[in-house]
Length: 115
Length: 111
Image 1 (cartoon, each protein chain N blue to C red):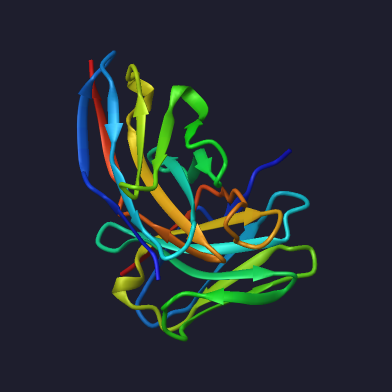
Image 2: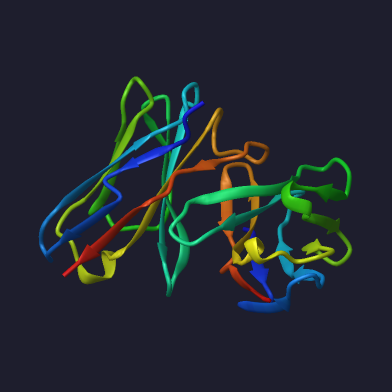
């Protein structure tokens, strides 16, 4: 069974631009969650999508958005990029909701650098 | 609200010696607890999880963790470190769709 895939793996953008990251979950998984990982803030939860609906959201500004398609693939978008958005963005999928008992399977991440 | 604290940001051990990575949690409920490992330039991989069954949980690669409610701890241990164990380890507490990650502990294994 193929794992979680994220594209692209590396991305360089300049301030003010926007970016779209893609995540394909494991086949059969309906929940996709996004995380931002930085050396200073660690791992922070961005949002979770389940059955094409955002179910849970972390404490990030509205510049960060996402969506999920009917095949469970998900995209996240960051508009008006700032230097502080440079991070590793991780996507994780699970069979059910991001709930207490469900293991999440993580992709390798997209490394975003904002210049 | 719940939170998780990893007591050491960096742990260094020699190959073949025991590993102890410490994690304390705070939760008003009975949470589930996980340990994930992240190797360089890779995503996170689940090592083990506690979900209110046996308090001693065995995971992959020889790791295990013991849930101690009285101490609100979920420390990760391994009897004998291997060079391939060098990575970042994250303790995670979850309850009812609220998932919190610890700051991580970087494990270095010296030959």
